[in-house]
Length: 147
Image (cartoon, rainbow, N blue to C red; front, side, top):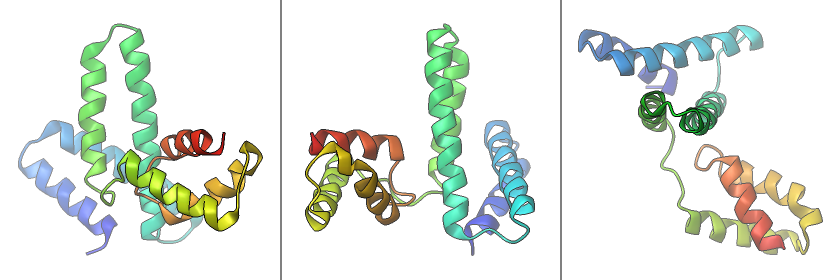
């Protein structure tokens, strides 16, 4: 079963179970996938679906920060719940220690020495860790290692 089929199947099940949060979340995800599919003019590949899910997680985390600043903890909690649902459709996420280990390998392979090499390191690292780590987190750890 492809990731897209799993999302559609889970949406059907959440509607039957009357799980409003999951249904809303999966409808939003399905709409984003459909928009990207129309834009590309073809079926999406697994990596593209994972990238869309990662993007939605990133937007959700940004929303949580803004809601917390604005004193809207109820909306921040709703976003957190949606993010946890999105994570179910991504591969197991790497821990910061695992990300650091992978980055050290990439840095030694490329003989990167300074922050000027960050772009090259990020490109290779993100291709290896696609869907398993958020780019912002990888970037922060890479900056720390290169400085």
